[in-house]
Length: 149
Image (tube, rainbow, N blue to C red; front, top):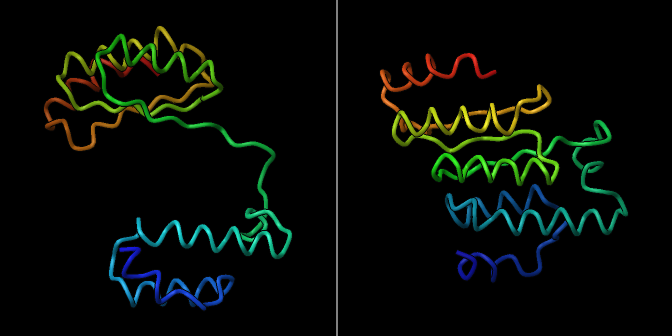
């Protein structure tokens, strides 16, 4: 994708980001993963030229901090719990557990992470099955974890 796109970008104004993105969309349908690094580089150039942080270019700063969020890959329940603990100790407060395995293992994953690791209300835990559960499986997991929050 870059080999097709980049030769035609040479000479374009990197800080005219809307025009550049419009051109990339016409020149290469889809493939946002190809265009995204170019778009980010142009925003970086604009920030450097204007001597402004990106947040100001995109509308301004809101708040002084951002809560850290971490997706936790699906592994056996104990290992997932250990991964959550590691990231909690690194300062993360929001976790997305990648579930969608067996019902019993997913219940263990959720309970271990909530009860053993994230037993404080400041932590947010979300289970993401990503269409990995059938309706009856989801209902079983909900019934068995509803008191974990």
